Length: 232
Image (cartoon, rainbow, N blue to C red; front, top):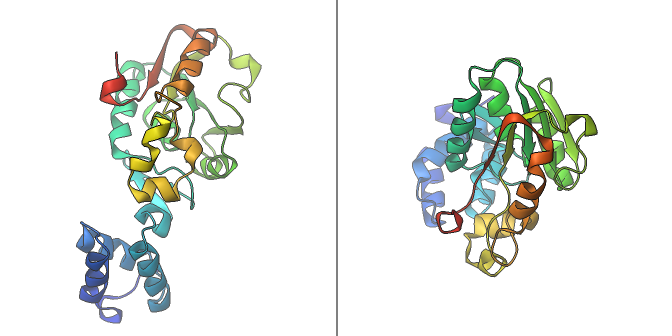
């Protein structure tokens, strides 16, 4: 239940957010007001946002590919740029019924949930090494697929080998020495394991690609995200 317009001063909330450096203070104020159940809760949520917590962690969800994805504190927030990854996968699999989809480094499960929503009869499996992320993903893909806790392919059912039509991997790809250059919202409030890709940022991706062929079905595809300077 959201607050009524008369129960809170939007301008006061906007002012607090602006003072904290929030660029889109007006939009964020509207989200906070709609998410809060009482003036006291709104005050607490505004304080958390002004202190630097990601807006998605404050309200408990992120919009991703037209879906509302639950995001718990500390869990990697799905980025809008990753919708491009989803769109590429959908473009290649849209006419296929019952595609087997694996979402590695799934985080909150947003990528897998978006693919499931777009593909007819998809069979969805997701995995992440972060227990908090897996708990979150399980809520987001309830009734859609299974989420497993473990390192990359290790927790996946062995029966998936050679059957995967769409393998997506939004791996951590920030070089270790550049973690400290990230915005505080990511650097402080998201799990480091979701960000740190090793010395050149490609450690996890190398492991994904090294084993991908053994999991993909004939004609299957691997999709992953990197920075522009890491791309071939």
